[in-house]
Length: 230
Image (cartoon, rainbow, N blue to C red; front, side, top):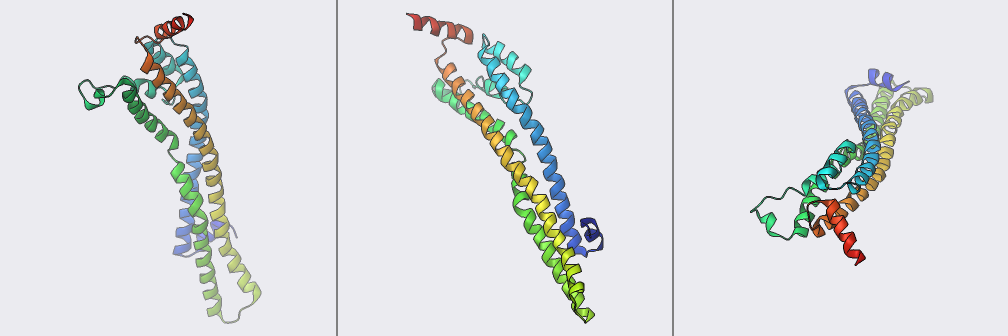
């Protein structure tokens, strides 16, 4: 008997469990396909965007170049955040390094929230789907044994059929959970690599703007180079 036959012939509890597993499977596969596409683009975009930034002559030029590569808006928000300083506010009372640390930290958190989206769903499906399937199995076995007991005579062939049908729910739970767990672990590693690249860029950007003498990054770099030759 297939999963669909169990769904069609089962009682209300069995059908509810089966539909819940189906919904969890669909949701997890949507997230897996979407995040696989997103992270594949993001990894390449972050590398190209940071390279374009360091090859720019000024902040304006950097924003223009990064915007052409940063399709998922992961690097550009960090650059734009460095200009979000409200004059006269308490945030502007700190020194330049502290201001940059705060705004870059907030921007980095927003970017990482975008990358982490869907991870909670995959973790939840991966951890709960086997137990949902087990619930369906336990209920199915109980329901089958109750029906067999009311029939009177109990034989192996009468027990093995209904119990085997109930065990399909356990297999269905594992079928739903395994892709979610694999997706969560694989995406977690990819997100960790991208996060490390973004944190490194934010740290380098803060150091650069803290010690820059002029708004032009290219000019500041030439001045620093010239100072190093004397």
